[in-house]
Figure 1 (cartoon, rainbow, N blue to C red):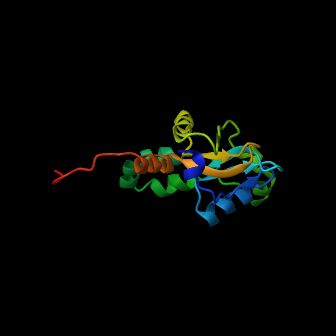
Figure 2: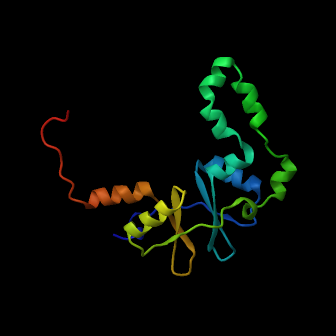
Length: 166
């Protein structure tokens, strides 16, 4: 089975000269967790993930989550959360480009790669999804572990349990 057989073909992307304001708008309006960034020829040049946005706007987010129960007991969570939100001024959101915040050290898979090859590339990175490109390296889709595992399970002869499960 090939990547093209299971990839998500409906993909929202952003040009590398899109602003940070455009990035935020795409994430919020489309409820996405990653955003491929493309050049003028629609070739993938980077990827922006939810973790990238957290690093920009809420740099202490994971620290706060780790200490959540202790902070909640002491009533300090709200004040620390407010202090951790660095945010950016509206003018900065227009000056910072997608190319400034994207991760450009990404791998992609081709639509004719095998699912196991795609799974291997996903495993070697910390991303949940990979861009799928055609022969000209133009963005044509996204693939995740979720789609790969479902396809492999559908295509395998996994023995079905008989009787009652304990």
